[in-house]
Image (cartoon, rainbow, N blue to C red; front, side, top):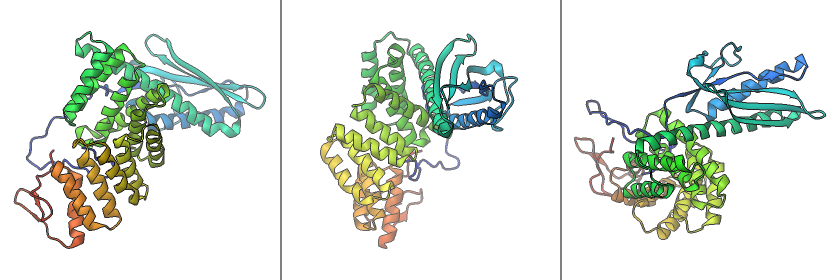
Amino acid sequence: MFEHPLSPKRGTQRSGEPRRSLPRWPCLLPSTAVAVTPLRNLTGDPTQQFLVDDFTDRLVVDLFRRCRALSFAWAAGERRFAGNLAPPDPLEHKYVVYGSVQRGGPGMLRVNMRISDTLTSDYLWANRNEFRLEDLAPMQAAAARQISRVLHLLLIQEAARCARVSADLELGVGECLIRGNAILKRALCAEFSSEAQRWYLSALASDPRSVDALTGLASTCQHLVSNPWWGEPQAVAEASDLGREAIEIALERAPENAVAKCIQGMLCSEAGHLPEAARAFAQALAMDNGLAIAHAFGGYNAALLGRAWETLPAVERAVRLDPSDRRHSVWYFFGGFAELLLGHTEAAVALLGKSLKRNPSYGSAQLFLIAALSLTGRQQRSSPDGKVISPAIPRIPRPCT
């Protein structure tokens, strides 16, 4: 069941109930520390030091925002510019990010960036770019994107190695993908999604360039982000960052992959990047107009953008295109949510009732149905155990924890 981070969360636990253990997500490794060395000023002009320091500060802030699966600290002995970086502990650093700024062509500056392995001092990545002073901000943003991409690739590679060891099987890429896909077809739940993720990572251990494995990894990250009660808040944030990086890498290698583009839209929407998500859904449908999930999620994203009148037609197209009942509960919720926004309360009640008929424990549908019924003036009542009973649908169980 999909629930957007902007929609109400379900799974509230009653006092006295035993806490259900959360599954282990193979893509989320123990915190990896990255040392940051402030950029060196090699321009020969001391007056440029302020510019170099500002570049470092902005870069660090962007890395904090993009790489929530990592912890950053200044390298030992370096002065601290940003006060929110952790104190240095070089024994724990796995990677180090460093670089310099020097003169380039006429009127240009050149920024050189590197990432090295702390233990071996091997270069893992290096890049240089020239820019004019007026282009400092976009240059810094581009550098942060490049570094974020490399660090996430390193995390995926490490997680893939761990998954391959834990699988204790010498299976090929194809067999790993078959197993991961088969598990996801069984049901949409935390345990199955985390297990499928392990197989996608095992495939990446054999072929780091596998588009299908990267897409599968991103889809399981999207499952966690869509169902935030499946993990701790930090795990959900980390999965969001990793999933978006993984799907971008997949799309760089297969830009016409409609499913991957749709997953990108879903992850962007859940991260609150609604216009970017809308573009991704439109591109996915341009590649494959029969992709039901892109119609449904694109329609929901349209409602969040203030175009709720587009949602129900999109949901109806999705239901016609995909006869499977597995996602219909989610899609009917999208339609009911949008109709409620438009003030069409009777239509909203009917759609939310359809959603709950297919999945009685769908928390968001329960909540919005109660809101819709209250607007119509119809009565709802609760049984002693807190389960909702309404005239629109049969007795609805309390949401699962």
